[in-house]
Image (tube, rainbow, N blue to C red; front, side, top):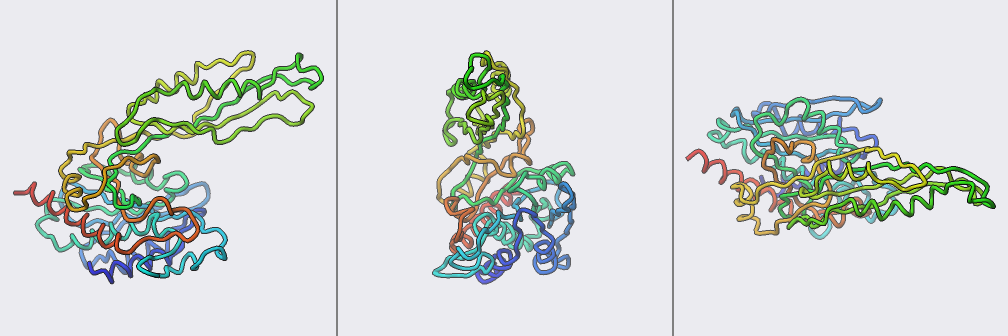
Length: 378
């Protein structure tokens, strides 16, 4: 695809607001079906609607090719809220281009990545021999920023059946992600006993028990390290307890966010948490969310070909992407997380992406796919 075509697609995507909440994707899907993935050009489009609470959200699956083996190109449509528009140098949905940078909410996370995936799909539509053996699947998902429910919906509908490769176009600053940390979110409720603060010996102070608990939460982690992800981490994100200065607090709650490397046994971690005792208080733990840690084989042929064209770094991601939903650890599919956009400027005012990265990423991804799967046919 030409640079002009890619720029036009990216501008249209950024100029179509998809803030989450509510995360509506109707307009962006309509644009892609009517202007980009046209049926008369060989694309087949399927809209996958579902409800999250009372809001109807929609995913888009666009395919080209007729082969049994599937290559999935995945990205999310939703973006985080733009906040106060007056604080932006350029309006957050204007897609202004200044000095080779396109500004706007979602420009890096991840409409630039979507543009790369779309451009790659369009580049491949004339590769007729390749399309006889493989089916290329564009998955545009809803709600990645607030629960990944779009990816879950598509997974349950079998989108990964016969998949041999997953490409997630998250912003990596052109580095090649081969791993991402899993997560375990825990709510911990500490129960003590209330009393008047003038006689604290008659009560059980749940806040003081919480202070004893925090070091124990860290000690539940293994001291293992991953070459690209480093060590597992813990963040105590929220703590609530007490009602007044003159009352011994009877209940305190904490939320703990564990980010886990593949080497960390999450089952063992959960058991360790369940076994914690902070006498004289009692402790109840509850898992609110979990995703597996993932790592793929660096020696995978496609990854090596992408590395040859891109000549960038191999990295691990400290956060989770839709890959954590689409790749099942018991039946792993090779995956890569790769895209234009610098993670350091996402979710911020004046978010931008360098257009040069969008053009290069599309070229590199297209060439790596062609070299990998043309070679397999020889």
